[in-house]
Length: 553
Ligand SMILES: *[C@@H]1O[C@H](CO)[C@@H](O)[C@H](O)[C@H]1NC(C)=O
Ligand SMILES: *[C@@H]1O[C@H](CO)[C@@H](O)[C@H](O)[C@H]1NC(C)=O
Ligand SMILES: *[C@@H]1O[C@H](CO)[C@@H](O)[C@H](O)[C@H]1NC(C)=O
Ligand SMILES: *[C@@H]1O[C@H](CO)[C@@H](O)[C@H](O)[C@H]1NC(C)=O
Ligand SMILES: *[C@@H]1O[C@H](CO)[C@@H](O)[C@H](O)[C@H]1NC(C)=O
Image (cartoon, rainbow, N blue to C red; front, side):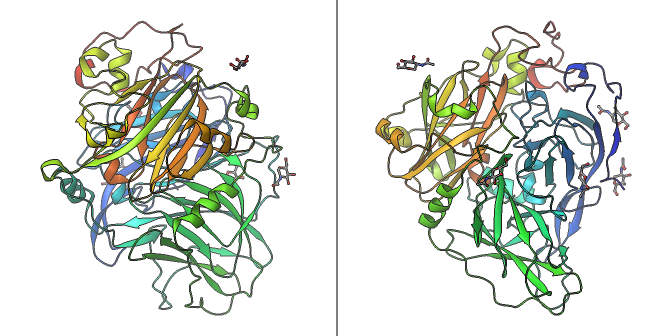
């Protein structure tokens, strides 16, 4: 089976130049993916979807910390393709990050191999095709990082480990959705919510997504892979014990339901302690006028009878969600998954060297929808920003720092369309405030780093609000939501050299410019700080044909 990885220890690196991108002594996981279109009817009507080895959603990547992951991808679509491994910190290695601003796309009819090493981010992630609206067609799948045997995990080994990828779903193809956005229109409302590519009908014909043995405890990894809506996850009659959030062990609280915002993943334990029969797992849209509901069946082995048609109620309003966010705490005594051993434990004591406020805005000038951060609506060009920088032609492709750290209040009324790149000095400790003046809930994702999500509050931020930060046990993660007319604060050390995407996970907003890139340069041009661009890396745009810069040493 394709999904089952072959493990080979001590393999010589497959390709020249990858020597420094992967450590030779750690085990390798090899995958070969055939990416094709297919026709499925996940929402009742036939539509084009993206398949990986015929699967929808794609296969799970089951890895263990320090594994080298090698994925050879055959692009059998009729358009360029990139895969992004959301939340995986590509240390010194934005070459493998798989977004338009860092890597050239895999052209249709060709194959390309990603090589990266997963580190101690023990937890739940997902990958997806990152160009345009491709994620609207599927092509996503779970990515888990297990703990090495020697590193204890703060809960007993579950009986089994299940991934639930839920998200809102459109019945229009990803290319039709792109055309809407290109023409200045909005995406409109999704049609349904899918859970692992389906929505149970409840007519007795549904196959179970997973099975549980009475008395046993299971790990479920809950991710929101959707495009527009936050979802609320809940199981009929079962509580969830939260154990992990985006690669960090959490304080283990019990929840009846969990709000999972766009791009987020939670790891929970569920004990099969109810009457043996079928139960629904439910993911329903949050903060929407019309509530969409996706369901899947979880079956007890030897269970008798169908799931009750009564679905547990979802919470209402975002104050509930904000309170839930505040209950998420990092487990300070759990011994794994420390993103930044030098400073993370005492992040509350590190002096902030720079504060950046990022204000999102929308413009409908001339009937054309665009979204921005601090007045700049990002566009991607032919040349990935990272390659322009590496080959020394950045000044021909983009300008650094076109936005200011402390924008004036009227920034929401101005908008320019250009590449949006901020430069941060290597190893500085930065505070970023996200201000949301809009009516919809935002969700942001930062590539390449984990950050401390220290606060979310209603109203407007000012420096006095720092006294409300959680400076002790905020969860280290890579996404944060911002409620309407609210702000959120994150803190992190920019200790990973490269070019890193910061984006709204709302597909419409991201597609229409609400994203930027963070450049963290290495003053030393040293392998200690960043890997060389691999020999096999694709080149395109203005750097095509240019001589390769001298290697780092
Ligand atoms: C990929 O799948 C398509 C459609 O099933 C098939 O025609 C093609 O031969 C496959 N390619 C590879 C490399 O397996
Ligand atoms: C995932 O990998 C771990 C470690 O190799 C293994 O113990 C586990 O059985 C695997 N799980 C699945 C679902 O393949
Ligand atoms: C394409 O696939 C072939 C066959 O598996 C492999 O040998 C080659 O290295 C791959 N090419 C790239 C650029 O990854
Ligand atoms: C935190 O992790 C430790 C193991 O290192 C575990 O014993 C403890 O129960 C966890 N604490 C909470 C509150 O979940
Ligand atoms: C942080 O700033 C305070 C006040 O400016 C200063 O006294 C202290 O030495 C600084 N700490 C570090 C580690 O730089």
